Image 1: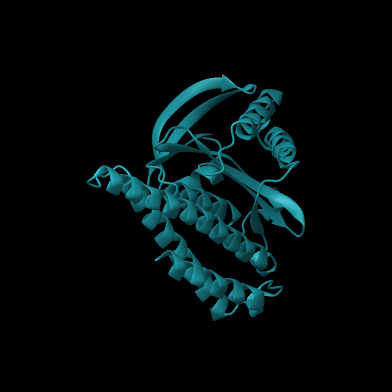
Image 2 (image 1 turned 90 degrees about the vertical axis):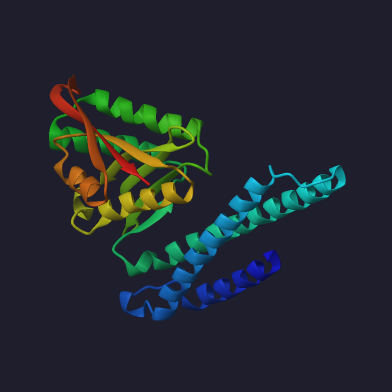
Length: 261
């Protein structure tokens, strides 16, 4: 099974090499879209296959020799599967970078310096648009510091959105427990609004959380953030709790939203 899967990877890489990067929306061909779909199917198949192998490690394998040999073989398969999944993640990242020029924006994972931008722009925008004080900026600084200091790349993710070479948005998925993840710090710059970027960022979080095996995605927001609340509702989140407070210099109503995955 594994050699057959590995044979598919060069085919996908070949397609990427001959179709990416794309610098004009008119150049996005059916071939690119087909390869993206094939990549997604391949990743899902590999992930489900090796999840099954991992579960099988706890099964009874008969005699002591059989158990040792069987589990040794399963360990080897798991190691190979993890390597293959990393390769597929690299391919997927290459696709996303190739499509950078085919959309008004593109998404990437965080890099050094991005956490400073996230903190700064949250502080500035929320002060300009809602009059929130520096305590909100301090909260954002704490969230991003905790994210970096405790970062688990297998279970957590930050997406940074760029447009015309400049950062215009961000969002995070942070592990709360084995079964629950938090969606945090959705931000879209004013000049990038109205393009579907906020929706795209939230959908990326949902997709990631599902693929990593979370059962629920939760978030905290405020009732005055109308545009964000509209996105959450449209993507399936349900409002489950409301609580009034005096925060960041204002009387606010905090809200907790949940999405069962």
